[in-house]
Amino acid sequence: MDKILSGIKPTGKLTLGNYIGAIKNFSKIQYEGETFLFIADLHALTLPIDPVELSNNSRDICAYYLAAGLDPKHTTIFLQSTVCEHSEMAIILQNYLYMGELSRMTQFKDKSQKMDQNAIGLGLFAYPVLMAGDIVLYDAKRVPVGEDQGQHVEITRDLVKRFNHRYGDVLVMPKAEMVKVGARIMSLSDPTKKMSKSDPKGDIFLSDDLAVMRKKIMSAVTDTGHEVKYDVENKPGISNLMTIYGALKNKSFDEIEKEFEGKGYGDFKRAVADAVVEEMEPFKARYNEVIASGLVDQVLQEGAIRAKAVASKTLERVKRAVGLYNINK
Ligand code: AQP
Image (tube, rainbow, N blue to C red; front, side, top):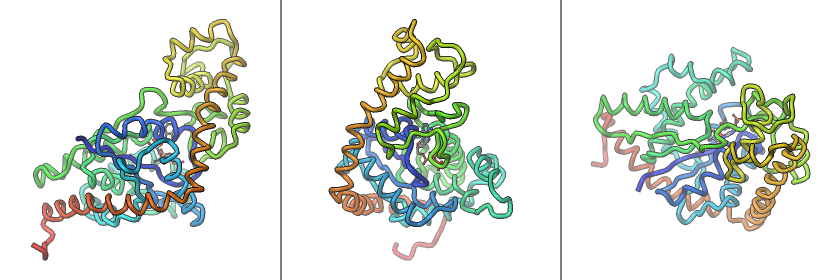
């Protein structure tokens, strides 16, 4: 059975992009393998964050996983910081990725560009090292992610190749997997930019009221013309709404174009808003139930034990491979 691993970092309120590009898919594929889903709270420290917010966001992600139908009896759901092997693995692996390649990572370039150049944390730079450790610790072959995380899985593959070339067949080679439709949902106010939880403009947050979600869709930036046609270059706004609609209704762009032939943007936006509300209404109700049930702590405690049992074995294997002296042999 292949191992599947993914995570979300609790840097802000989750968006519809996180839901379509990641969470919705996790619940579909969880039984296809041994699945590990974590809350990447150590990754969230790579940029300044309020401690209360970080802790609340972490709890919320777990609740959203459960609301989406992730089954904690099958899928190991855990907090990254509760499994110390992640940190230890990163300390070892940092020696097998190079500063040149880390400095070329798009996420690092995007995020560091906006910062005071004298105050860029080492953690932000080394983010892909920690992420590589997250992946290899669970021998994950499949790593479902949205488009923006694809590059970090690629650099993990480079690391695995380099490491195994030196020490033999120690680490399992992972592969990124992306949803066919919705791996990059764009901002509703600027459809040339990704919908992102750290950028509050133009996003639909999973915590928004249904009426607010509807309003945001109805006022989404669209393009000149009135034809509902998929054309990212000339119609980025409509193409983004088509992606959202297609992902939620499981329809191809051709089917959507036919469905809205002869109708205007107004009718189409109403249909997109209906689709979002239809999906979010039961999802948000389940989230509220999970929060009220107190299940989150129990799931995370059990998850930490199960995750640690797997991660500690891999770490031991890696330590032996690189020659760290084993006093327990
Ligand atoms: N707009 C998006 N469309 C599709 N997928 C997306 N994901 C994020 N935004 C979109 C995917 O959601 C998963 C969790 O994301 P993450 O927290 O690990 O990192 P991220 O890609 O950096 O997400 P954000 O929302 O943009 O966070 P911030 O603003 O903190 O950087 C990943 O699989 C991601 O690809």
